[in-house]
Length: 356
Image (cartoon, rainbow, N blue to C red; front, side):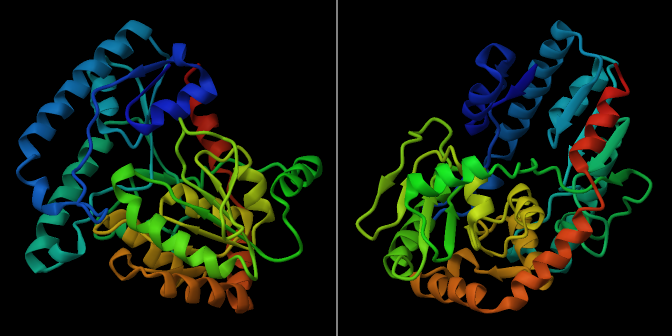
């Protein structure tokens, strides 16, 4: 049984069926008009967010008790950890963010002090789990290192590698995707616009203006990442293709020369495992994505553009730089070999199966 809320409900409904999904109380942060995390609204809403968290715990505890599982698997969901332990069920936690890093504007001495206290407190709560699996590569290759920096996780977590789903090399499906979108011998740039709807506006605007130029020299496909949206492609005046929900995402990942996306951990893991350089635009003020993108660029795997500095021209220049400089591809290929030493999905499955 799956318990979730928000956009994930539509995704789960598509893949496992609505009868196996329950909708838990939704807990999210506030977003600004320009698509960033609203730190100003966080403090006023903190009490209501805490109340929602306890509603989540109560809902999860009842759902878990009614279902009677052999094991509770928490995908970075603290309420599931607490609820599982309340019912004396074993809990396995998968996460890539051990602590909550404060937004850049709070990265001063005082902010880091409280960030460390919050990180250690979260660590105690995560450690209620019997197993904590860090779905990332171990140091010095850890993409999410900013999200546990300053905390001692060596005795708590196991680094298992990325859990991005493997992409099967199916030549027939690849040909069908190429025929569907008329992909020719030019490079393919695949733009994935994911995340909460409130964060997409500026990103969409920059991408649409950029493809007017990029489509002259490259194949361009845009996906809005809306699980409830249409899966039929629509051709834009620029010649680029547009999906509300892309049913050939895996095929396009294999065919692409470059990915343009947010800096979510799962997407970065899939870029590395597929051997694709990327231009990453983290959500404004989103500390996890900012840290991910900074490490991605530091490793020479692609280029980061801060959301507040995103313009069509800067995006165009970054895409062209990644496509023209072979160093990015060489670095991703080297990182891919490191990632191939691990099989995160298999290891997580092995841990969960041990409770049968």
